Length: 341
Image 1 (cartoon, rainbow, N blue to C red):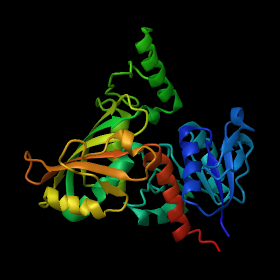
Image 2: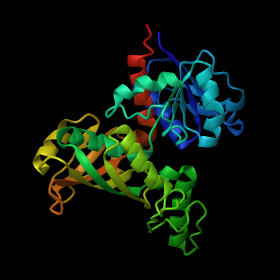
Image 3: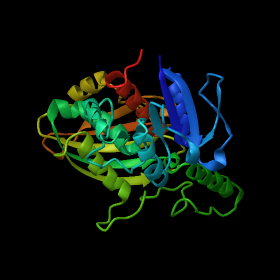
Image 4: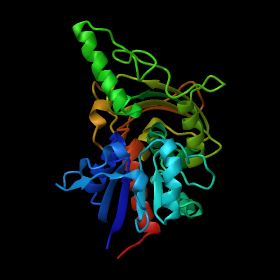
């Protein structure tokens, strides 16, 4: 006997990826519902490569009673309305928006990092999925923190346009095409031209000069990994379609060598170490697309601090940064709390 699973926002980039991953991982679902806004009602949606076609249902009229798990991949505004309704109906919500991440009564989960925290879902029947850039970073940091205790993290991100949804991907494509034929590269989704450019600005600016995306990385890392870790981030949008990259400087309380860190990362859950000190001996965003792993390369010692490392971290933001992590949470929830059969 399996679960009855709802994917809310099934027509978007992340929602479609959730359906693909549920199918790929053969999640034990007896029934899958694809749900989205009224304008998508009746649309045919593929359930991975199973050959099964789902008819999209209208979120406004969907009844969550009798469903076990709802994977939400819609914005905070819709989540605020419908997630509490689903939770009240007895359906556990796994939410990909930022709405509940810092709610003290909602666990913020990366299964390889803090699986035990999922037990707190019973307070609201809601579990939060972290920001895409946070998710891959903490997967890489967790085994190193266990080994030598991280004091401080300085991270610069290189985030793909898919993090801004289909509109971001379309804008990169259209601007690139326009530049090649001599037409103007008009910026609509982003604040400046993204084609052949980088933009040091993701999400809105805060009073202290940081952006909300940078703030998310700080507070989410503290909640997921350790509140004592000091984190500072600079988040940058780059002209890459899929795959986020991060250059991470890590300062530790205890001594740790690059060789020891490589050994630890080689065995760490969710991590794939590709670190050859030669041309091409590292992973780039193009190579991580469609993969489950968080790739780590360029592991080296930081000579500017007493105990420090520098690493390069790459992951498919639509997968580990969003859809995959949500499905992994659902699998963890099933193992620990919603056992069937």
